Length: 401
Image (cartoon, rainbow, N blue to C red; front, side):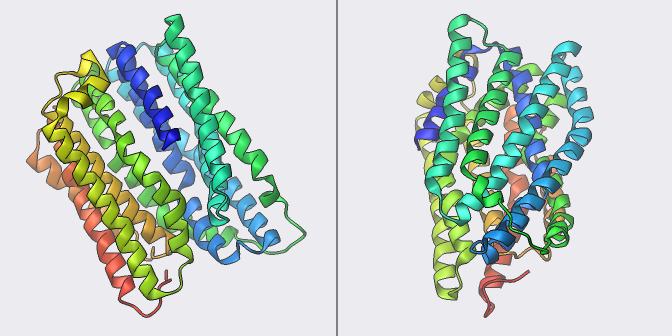
């Protein structure tokens, strides 16, 4: 909660005190970084969790698994950068960003990608061994570095897009260094002939397409509004997205603690109760936040500052979209943690179906229409994940591919 509070303060400083054009350009860079994080993982994190759940108590083989996972993910990060940069370059040009700024922003986002991905993968090991303090120290280090650098930029009057991105890069590398040092004993591998490259590759082959579509699902609103509207709408959408910290503060403990714990459960009755508790809690929080925003929009909009005080109608739509996305992400994380990925390709179809339904129902050139589109587009995937969970829990064995 403290870490999320620090991140919220940093994010709101950017929203309130950056020029709107600068914040629109920063939003696109943040979208690129999120895209690279997904493509750099590409299913490796799922493989580490699923395989590591079986061998986490075998130091030599577990170290080999981590080493091979990190090497594979590094290659996927480079591939993701090559695939994503042309799209984002076009978006920057479309909303009128200078070429020099565009190139610098893309390079800074790329520099932040690998430390972010490697931190996520090494924290799989920490979560499987319930090393909560290490995870907290890493998160706290990154959050404090970013807050401190951002504060210096604010006080000095230098809070523009490139300095803000530099703060993100420094924070990511500081967190990655701490996690690497604190997790280095996991990477010490005694002589062993065991290799998990083939099994990890299987997870990537099964899930990479899904990660590409999760990029679309998570970032499509920013991309579409960038093409169909302009800098003001991109900034509005990015500012409202900052309020997602309200959900992250609740779901982070679930992802850090509950999901790995659920991955280890063997008792079917306990598994049902824990999954129901995780999903039920997420749904309750999402509904409560949306209701409060409908009744009391002013405090939420005050947080965003004067440039965004007009977003009264868009506010509850944004929080509803973020809440549904949070629940969908959690449901998918539970599916992955249990290794129930045999028919994961179906989420590509559900994502496309959601896009088609949303595009048919709402105007995509406005912020309100884009937020409504986002809410509707995640529903088919959420229903699919719930269906997989219900089906698997009805079987005798809790684990399965």
